[in-house]
Amino acid sequence: MKDQAHRSPAQGETRAQQFENARSQAGQVSLSGESGVLFEQAMAQTRMAITLADPNREDAPLVFVNRAFRELTGYSEEEIIGRNCRFLQGPGTDPAQVRKLREAIASEEVVIVELLNYRKDGTPFWNALHLGPIYNDDGSLRYIFGSQWDVTDVHAARADEKHARMMEREISHRMKNMFAVISSIVTMTGKLDGAEGLAEKINARIRSLGRAHEAMLEVSFTEGPTDPRKLFRDLLHPYAPMGAGSVTLVGGKVPLDSNVVSVLALSLHELAINAVKHGAFSVPDGHVRLDWSLEEGPDGEARLGLGWTETGGPAPGNGAARKGIGMTIISRMLALGEGDIQYDWRPEGLHVEIHFPTSL
Amino acid sequence: MNMMDRQTDSAASPLSGKTVLVVEDEVLIAMDINECLEEAGAHVVYGRNLRQGMQRLEHEVDVALLDVSLGHTETCLPIAQALRERGVPFVLHSGDLQRLGETISNIGAPVLEKPCDTSEILQALQGAMQRVG
Image (cartoon, rainbow over all chains, first blue to last red; front, top):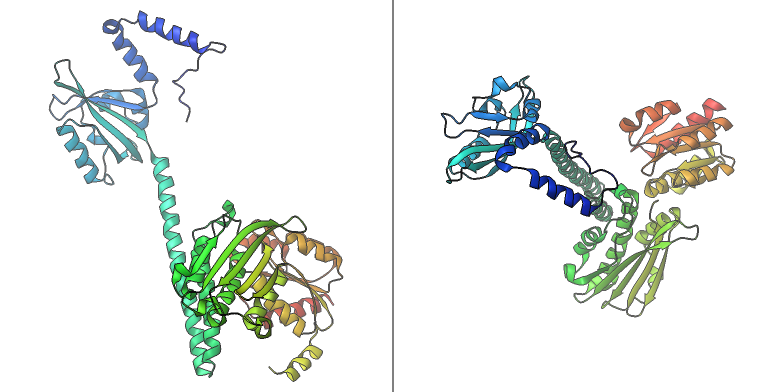
């Protein structure tokens, strides 16, 4: 915000010259004689609405208001002077804030409150009101100084933010519900159709998908790279025998898209399930290290590289022989997205490398 | 559905032997759609974003299924225009009818709302081909 009352110094003037000018001007000021004039001029120019109230008179009436105050409130000087400033209050004004003002005035303290006030035409505005005591030379209270600034815009922005947060919670709630309903349908159908085992496999995948999207709910995909740590944690910890202790996550922020989240969720889900059945997550001391980084693909497209390394579990043997449905899903999914996956059944544990575009 | 049914299906399907362009940015959805189309005997050319979709137009395509919103900022509009110029019928597939309503009605093609059954997709593609043929 530019304050027009602040004139910029003439061009070409050096800092030293400015200082010298200011000093000589200050020297010319006879404070006793001219301070009144200066005060008047400064008050007329500033865009901050300023008031003085006299606490020594009945009901502390306003004795001075500047132009900015008249413009802010829409009242003329005659309508203001002599009245207590509570005439700006209205039905929406918070009594607690008013009480705070009253207490501060009584105890001669400086107070800042945000108050819903009303202009002469009835329109409300949010007033950031600062009140503080001004004393005489002898220490007695002379005036109550008030400055007010219209912060309606700030309030609107805050309200928008609050609304956005509320929507976020609502969406999160609905999404969880939706995933739960889908799960129930799958379970019920599976039971009635004598396919409970199949239903559970489907449900486990749906749950992982739900966890992944839940973890990414607060992430705006358009705002650049994000930290996928929470996503990976939420996906892997439910399957890790010692929770966080069984998983090491190594990597920085990467650009992610919502459709990439689904692919990541299902891929990691299958690897985790496989580890639970045959690998590192089948024993208490087993460990999985997941590292990730950004790579450049053959055509210059940004790619995500993931390394999955299991240790401490049983020797995997020939895992290729038992490449199940899960592995098939990952392979097809990644192939379609021009990614790839390589398995290395090392004696100390399975090692998997996955690469795919960060934006599918 | 057993193998016998599938074979009879694909022989009977009007999509059998046709080339179908599928543009869809959710690979999981694409995987499902592509497999169903292939089971119906179609040859699928797939693009997962606008750039790839445009590139796939180098193929002779009989019919296309276009996801309307591609990525954060792009839509299938350029592909739709190119297909229209060539007289290739297409069906739009969108999960965001409310937000994309105007874009969709401007394109003026049959629309399927996500999520929809793959059998509906097959039907819509067949219908689009019949209207042209």
